[in-house]
Length: 122
Image (cartoon, rainbow, N blue to C red; front, side):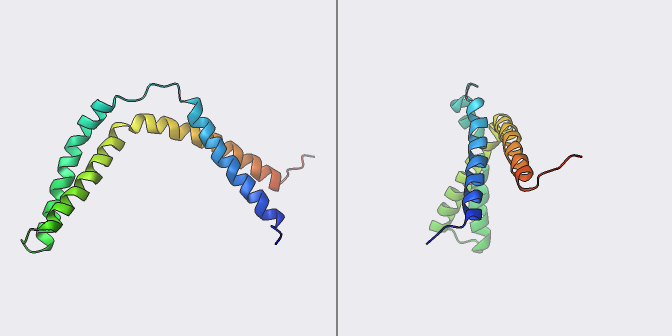
């Protein structure tokens, strides 16, 4: 079975986009990582809030009966809350990575568009 040439070019284009994003994040790799202890401590408040909301949601949904599902709701809510807290605490660093990757990917997209749509200047 032969692979169409257009499919090959799209795979190469996707590879180039991923490479551009990874190159951008690698160029920012010299920055110090956030202090994990500080990030974890700041995320604990979010985890407690998420666990409380999870247990309360199960309690209200089951009309006042608690059980194993309340524990499961607390665990899921706590995990979501902790993840949200970590994301919030590291948002500045994430923003820098996002902006660098977006800049590089946009350059690859522009080059691909010009390749597909050549501009003839008179």
